[in-house]
Length: 500
Ligand SMILES: *[C@@H]1O[C@H](CO)[C@@H](O)[C@H](O)[C@H]1NC(C)=O
Ligand SMILES: *[C@@H]1O[C@H](CO)[C@@H](O)[C@H](O)[C@H]1NC(C)=O
Ligand SMILES: *[C@@H]1O[C@H](CO)[C@@H](O)[C@H](O)[C@H]1NC(C)=O
Ligand SMILES: *[C@@H]1O[C@H](CO)[C@@H](O)[C@H](O)[C@H]1NC(C)=O
Ligand SMILES: *[C@@H]1O[C@H](CO)[C@@H](O)[C@H](O)[C@H]1NC(C)=O
Ligand SMILES: *[C@@H]1O[C@H](CO)[C@@H](O)[C@H](O)[C@H]1NC(C)=O
Image (tube, rainbow, N blue to C red; front, side, top):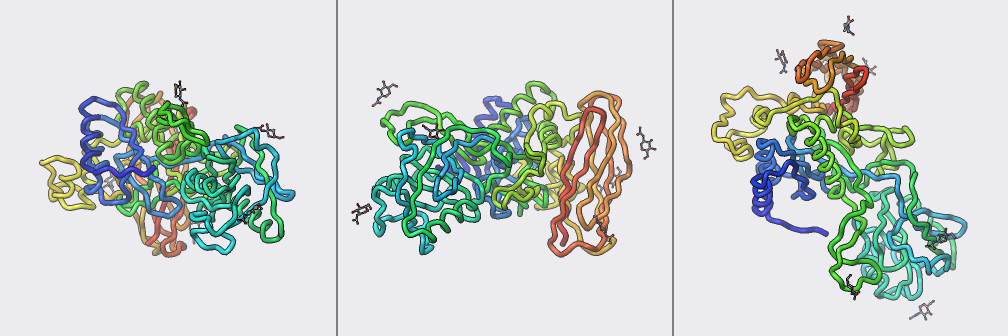
């Protein structure tokens, strides 16, 4: 459901929450990519951070298109959506193939009845592909093949049913890739991947009398690969934040069981009885992170919003349950880029004990903002009268003490870029060793190979010098990472280098 809400109302809502004394803002909303001063969420959240409130916001659902990401300010904790290994199985049986899809409606009476298969979109007319008007097709008593329209496809099912269709197969296009949704359809249905869509279309083309059935198998676990990035999850690189990697983190956001205000599905009574439903989107991923933030705040009341974000990011995992790099459902499960998964998938237990954090005090964002905006705009964002960018020592976005590292630099051999980072100890006394996995095309020199922390909240800084070795291509994006490892902790930061 798309709700339009004026920025003024959002600001009012967030202001009221701040006045109420909340600890966490869970914001499953966004107004699209824009400058910070034009985003009510960015402006209000900055004031929330000043009050030690953690603003958590969704990356929105415009993926896999790059750079259509909302809520990309560095003081926000920006959340993308991943899958889990749970599927609500609805297997399409066609010829001798079994194509594993999903549906939340699992009618037992339908089991095993085979029926004629119609494909209104066979001539590739967009509206026919999406089953928008079925007037020109006889779908009565048949199973209808329709292209996915959005994240939820229940409306398509309603159209098919109204036209007399008996069942439906929702097929993904290339962009939707492998992401399938367990919708509460109004008729027997299954949502299948783009790879399986190709198989069923080819079957229809090669059979004069195509028939299919759907076998409902209920809830299954151990789907593989999982977790993976959902096709729709909002992706960077951000066009507005100066190169800071966004999203920051991913959390489960596909087929999440959610409280629901009304009945739905094939036979709603019209009752406003509250119930449960599956829902998908970065809106579903965001409250997972907000809940984890609440837990961390309870366990560590003195951690700043930036410290909590750092704990969540540096302990995230980047391998799926099979031990492979987390894949991207929009791109054939190829390893997800940092602009799709941020630091990786949240690990709540590890986030509770990160060892070290990269902390940022709210006013530390001002030198960064001054590198991008004139004084009056920075004032509008941070709502502080005393700000004067003319007297402030600006820092590049890469220099912000962020838990991930996004650098833009020239390809030319020998070009150098220097950043500093400061770590704060939030664990026992330990010695940490540095390891760097170099992104292609650059050498990174650190001014130290180990850091020794002896007391709580002790701070230590290090310096990284990036030097291009002249091998990158224009606009190439290379990924690497660095870790600080002790006996008990691994503090990981993704490194993304964009060459210009
Ligand atoms: C449908 O049939 C399959 C295989 O025969 C069976 O495993 C499954 O439990 C049945 N589903 C329902 C909803 O009856
Ligand atoms: C539609 O197809 C059904 C089943 O094949 C058939 O019984 C019916 O006569 C057809 N309707 C029209 C209007 O052709
Ligand atoms: C609506 O819900 C109430 C309470 O759950 C129930 O008693 C009533 O029968 C329901 N009405 C219909 C039309 O299902
Ligand atoms: C990094 O820190 C060193 C020493 O603290 C300082 O001299 C240098 O200017 C800093 N570099 C940048 C790029 O801020
Ligand atoms: C450039 O750096 C990459 C690693 O970042 C390395 O694999 C490659 O061999 C280097 N090439 C040259 C010419 O130094
Ligand atoms: C730290 O690194 C230095 C230089 O690489 C090395 O000589 C020293 O032994 C290391 N110290 C520890 C405690 O690992």
